[in-house]
Image (cartoon, helix red, strand yellow):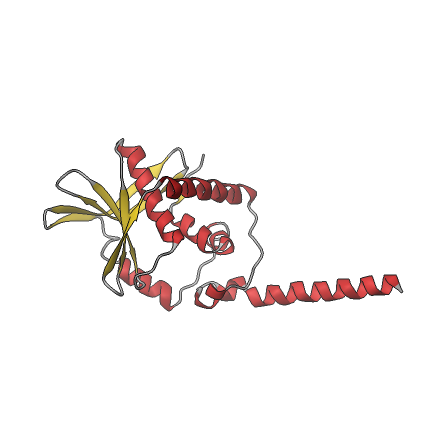
Length: 205
């Protein structure tokens, strides 16, 4: 099984079409949100470690799972004095709760468990804008969602099919809106439906 990027799990749950455009079609554009995200990740993207209040903080740690077919890196992995490992995902936003973020950090934990042969109880999301941190317990339900999402992601990659565009609330914040063109696709579908109705009306007269 080919390994897919861990980040694709987050993209897939946010928007399947966005995931396909980025990872299948290699299409990407920057906007203010992606640039701010890159700035937040500048420090954690540099491999290395430091000690903070007795906790060893490992940056840009490579991880993978042969079973799930995933690979990538953890922004940060904390090694606590009691031996606990805690993956920490950095986000630029204020403190919010999104299942795609939880799935991403849980997948990192599963990768660590598989490669190191240890159990990991949970991870964290650090929000740069608010300097808040949210703990993410790796519950059976969350682990199951990681499994389902990874399987669906592999199915999309194997099909090589990019989902059609659908206008959503989050579209206006997406850096790929000028590539995705959700409004144009909606107009195309609407026009097609109008012509189909006109043809059906003609056939019935």
